[in-house]
Amino acid sequence: MKELKAKQLRTMSNEEILKKLDELGSELLNERGLSSMGGAPHNPGRVKSLRRQIARLKTVLKEKGVNI
Image (cartoon, rainbow, N blue to C red; front, side):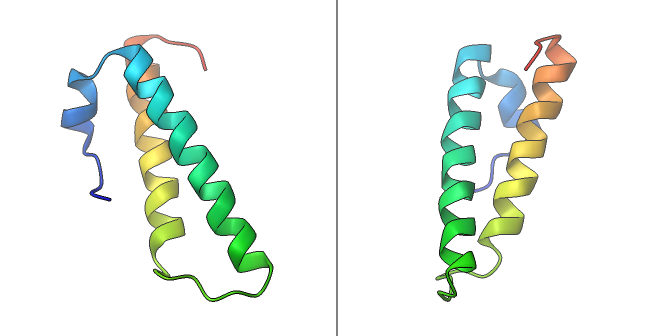
């Protein structure tokens, strides 16, 4: 999945951003679960990428004045 840039996120509606935040959060939870069970992840940088995308989403929401 392609990383979302802040410029793209600012054009999205609040509902879309919240939906994406929930989706990425569950995906991060899944990746962390796989790595904690000792399994080798398909993409080692995926966890870092997910964390950064979640941070971007939260930043854009805060700029828009939406409480999480």
